[in-house]
Amino acid sequence: MPHTRRIGIAAMVLAIGIAGVQAQEKIGVLDGQTVFRQFHKTKAAMESLRKLEDELRDAQQRMIQQLEQMDENFKKMVAEAEDKGLSEAARARKKRAAEDKLVEMKELELKIRRSDAENRRKLEEQHSLMLRPIIQEIREAAAAVAREKGLALVLDASDTGLGPVVFAEDRLDITEAVIQRLTPKTGEKTP
Image (tube, rainbow, N blue to C red; front, top):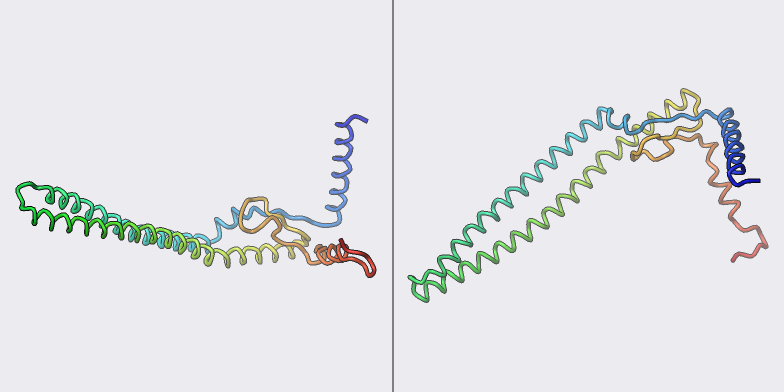
């Protein structure tokens, strides 16, 4: 039997099997991404997250502007320290002041980097805290609609945090049966 013909027959058998299952169980599909985007609580949460992001970005920008100002002052201090019209002692004082300013700038650069990492962590944490209950509420609404429509299983057709299976009746869960199948019988040797 040619290889392509075997694949075709296997596909037909699979389709017949799926059709048989579908005749027994009603399956629904949900575009979770659309539901998520249009849910009023999602819109409010996203707006709140956007405001937090703006606040954190503004604070970061102020520190960057402060660093830029310090850099300008540092360059002036270096130029003054190289002024041949000053005494050696005055140039040495200006050079030390410029070196101190450079240390201060390095500390601010480090603070900016740490602040940036902390801001990203805060945003991710807030994002998770705000969206987790929204996703749970969508799952609960999907389960309620599924029960009303007599659906045994609801699949998410989109790529969201809802997961591929949004709702499944408990009777469809085969977890315990699989565990029992994998559990060695009494007297059976385990590898």
